[in-house]
Image (cartoon, rainbow, N blue to C red; front, side):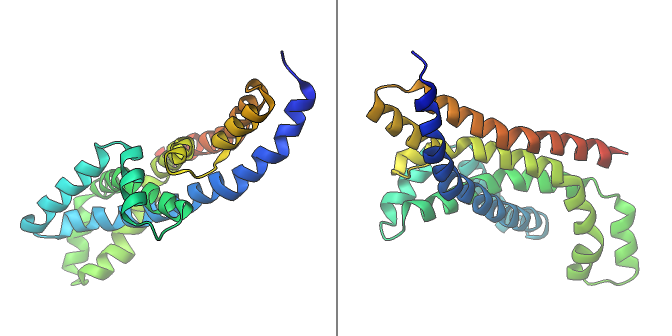
Length: 212
């Protein structure tokens, strides 16, 4: 049976877990993923094949293996790290492999003439990337990066595998103490929706704007 008071009592508990764990892992993990993804995308394009192919294999391996496995391996391999730190690192590395593909698509969308113009002007490779290619590529990639950040946000319940008390874990524990899970899980679902839906709408609008 639904309990309005229990619903209200759940709010501060889950909001605290949302702010202190779920949001921190999402923001820090997304920032790390965006930075590493850009590094991987440039490296795969600039490195010689003898180095790019092994890197591509490693990225494919990470992308094609489950996130909970990564969490457990790193958590038990580096016991000196806190669960929160492990979560940020693993989420960042895991999602960087997806973001690298988005960056590569953005880079490939740059017209060949711009590469040739930079070469004709004798611009060094570093300046070509910094002044010509990346501003356009990153701009074209922003909606996709935002969507990956939303996916990361929705995957934060996997932190339960390494005993990090994120929002869904907090909801489960609260429901267990009060012998009723419906109210707590409803609050968790609403918080996920309230955070992810506006972001998704913003990304769709940004994607449409950049298309013109």
